Length: 395
Image 1 (tube, rainbow, N blue to C red):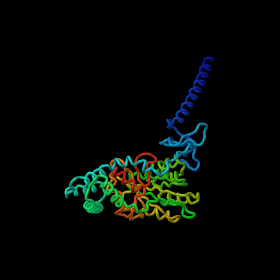
Image 2 (cartoon, one colour):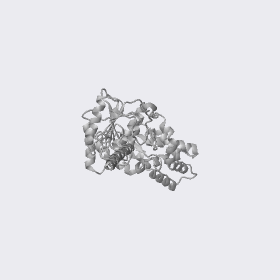
Image 3 (spheres, rainbow, N blue to C red):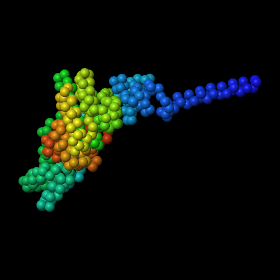
């Protein structure tokens, strides 16, 4: 009889030990994100940032010390101090710093034109080659023909074709073609009691959300108080991507936690919050859309109209991929009809881009290129400067 009670005692103790070990295992697994069993209602979703709710949405107004951001842009100090925000580079001088990349991508255009114009004999075949060089650089048919005619006259008058003289002449004409008289300033100053509103639009895949994040850095470097609105509600990662860009420089993001939410509602809420918080600039990122999809383009017009119930949209920036050439021009025309484009942002102007699209777009729309993206770095977005751009082409 005693043996039976002793056996029961061993079984009870054994079960207790196994239960304790199992509890430790579950706790450890949950801390590592490997546990897939039931969670308490107050637990964050797997992979969510600390301080997130069960849906994984972070309240940026009450941002926790540690943020789960892929770029690790925030450095957490020992002892639980607040994270150190990144300090963006000043916008002034960025294009000059990045001229080396720009000159590489456009070198064929500049060198080709200089070599042709400085040749001992410029006959009709040479002029045709010059025209072809300009067309291959995506400058466009009309501007290319115009420039060739001007160069013909000037070469005839100039007589000699010394390299320095040819370069000076070509530089002067290219600067005129790119048009230094266009207003390339950004409308990012408060309008009375209202913030400046910047709406950013474009097709899929041009780097629109990244451009908004980089432009936020430009504005922060100019001591602007910025708020972001994540009105791209169709791409699941867009809002989190934008919030990450903003968090790195202390800029909050208004976003919806519901997939497919009404973009106009998010934009409205962002502007409303910006007015209440008296920020300098509210930037609204919109979903990428194909220019031939009428419904999507109508929706974009709706976003702008809803925003203007609260404040005027002072800047509508169209983001274009410089590598798309003349297709980018077609995109620009359609977007301009829907939302009155005020400026162009050219991304991917490094690499294989030819740069002549700057001329083609401006000639076609009468809208200036205001910003250019020249690389993958966080501060590789620069204000467009005509003379530095031409100097980069001519190396």
